[in-house]
Length: 245
Length: 305
Ligand SMILES: Nc1ncnc2c1ncn2[C@@H]1O[C@H](COP(=O)(O)OP(=O)(O)OP(=O)(O)O)[C@@H](O)[C@H]1O
Ligand SMILES: [Mg+2]
Image (cartoon, rainbow over all chains, first blue to last red):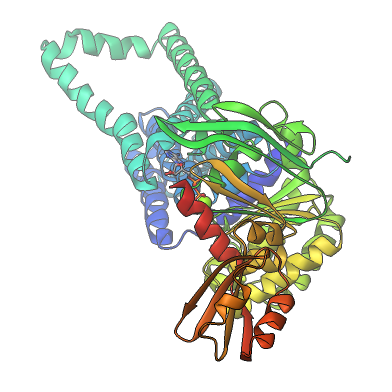
């Protein structure tokens, strides 16, 4: 199983940067967030960066973006380019194929997040005025990495489910982007407005609660439950006899 | 008798109300090229998908190498190779990487994988261009690469879904010669094709399916005899010569048209009939066997429609 998975991961890695025409798109979607969150935002925030909201953007946005860009290509793309049936006719088990592809997407998301975070810390310490060495607290870092991992896993599971139904890679990417970015970014302000009462409303109170220890734990537990549900659904959907039509 | 390598028993497959397979039964013996013939939509690809465990049958049973296609399809996939109706190549990866991936997928150890990849690429004349992206190759080369991939793990049985479709005569010939070589070394090949000449040339046995049912199977010659052996005779003084042979027991029918005789015989050998014609004063210019697998195929399909 491990050998099979590493075989599939090798293949995913080989074909990652070689999709025709996608190199520019890929570079842009990687470089723009990397440049913004890794260089511009830390320059602006300076020493405050380590305690501000910026690291959370890195932990949430970058892995999601990476998974949304790569996972549909790995699932819907394999069908669109007519390589899936041959892959499934091989001796690889469907679970080895699924977990290798999912793992690879999550790994990429985490790598993007950690690379950006490291870059941001280097920028903060070298190019802004900090007293001593500025670093993110260990507890905060662990919390961020945990949330990042769970979000990546959720996005990867959702990518499988959506890829099973989507006609094309692009359609799958758009649907995923809608689920993970558009809907939350529309819903947030709408909630704020409809809840009405400015500084002390229930939405503001909710965000305050998220900052407390019980709030943080609850978020992790909720994300973990969602991730398990999505991954289980992905495993149920990703079976040879359901994939070939 | 030795156990058949593929055994299909009353197999059905429904897509909605459409019966893609409608009670198909057949068996394939080891060590031969088995030709699986049928019109578009007859159910050939569906059958291969089921035999590889990629599609679940709606009813009936089938086994490959003694393993059940529903419960033991992992065992089947480990032991067989397949070239489906799409090449399945990763176009952005090199030819070598494509094969390397599948060699590792079949769990060949690294040194053995290297040796096998080199061997099959060389056998199919692709070694020199192994570093090219597979997508940059011509259709014929891609098809040969996919064929190379199917036999990386030296399978006992190969499923080939129209391996020569879309190839020019030279490429198609190369593929056919390669297949003949494989069978010489003991591989069994389950082949679908629309090319009747190819089936006649390569196959020891053919099965003709139509609308998901078996119409006929046997050696290509046996299928020909089912519709009678057609013989065309050209010559001088043919008018009236039909009288001389029409009552012979081996003559099924005899039509005279455009100064030519078109006969249907019960035997493949027309010499006795020709002798009778000569005795009746006909001067013969040409005797040509007219029936090919294609005619037998067309007739069977037409009767069924
Ligand atoms: N996934 C599917 N959904 C619905 N109908 C299908 C599906 N797959 C095959 N069919 C139908 O089943 C029948 C048999 O198809 P199949 O692909 O097995 O034919 P074939 O003999 O391989 O034809 P061809 O020579 O064109 O490749 C056809 O009528 C086809 O439309
Ligand atoms: Mg077909």
